[in-house]
Amino acid sequence: MRLRAPLTLESLKARTEPRWQWYGQDAELGECWCATGRGVRLCRGGYARIDVRVRGLNWSTRRLSAHIVAWLLDHLGPMTRDDLWLAYCEVRASGLQFDHRCESTDCIRPSHLNLCTQKENIAAGKERQYQRDLARGPIIHYEEEPVPF
Ligand SMILES: [Zn+2]
Image 1 (tube, rainbow, N blue to C red):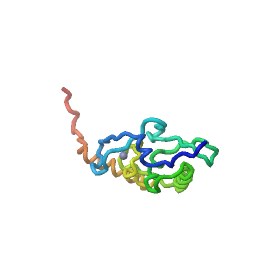
Image 2 (image 1 turned 120 degrees about the vertical axis):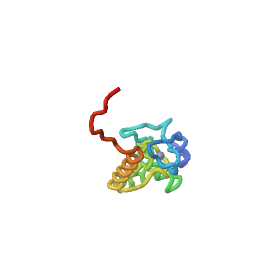
Image 3 (image 1 turned 30 degrees about the vertical axis):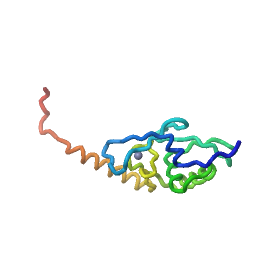
Image 4 (image 1 turned 45 degrees about the vertical axis):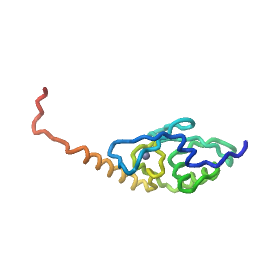
């Protein structure tokens, strides 16, 4: 099999569609790049995965988290599938996670992703939930049952 052109963030972005997520999303975050289309699968938790054929593994196909691939291509620049696979393994081995600042797990926009520990990831999610609850207003506790219409 011939070597294919290096993967780029642009080639991955072509498999997304822009979408605004509106539950307390920061306007400054901008729109999400939601993975969709050819070669994209939505898996457990709504995370998008893409299939990548790796030469160093006898051209076997690896199913990689699309947001991790996007983050790597953004930070390290265009790279071959083999380089991508190695970098991907390093990220997975580090135990670090990606917090989706936009709360949309199918989003792959690098600026929406924050590399962090699991503890930080959970804390950030709770903080956003708290801010959403605040924006929604106080919960009203009735002294008595309201009389239905
Ligand atoms: Zn997003």
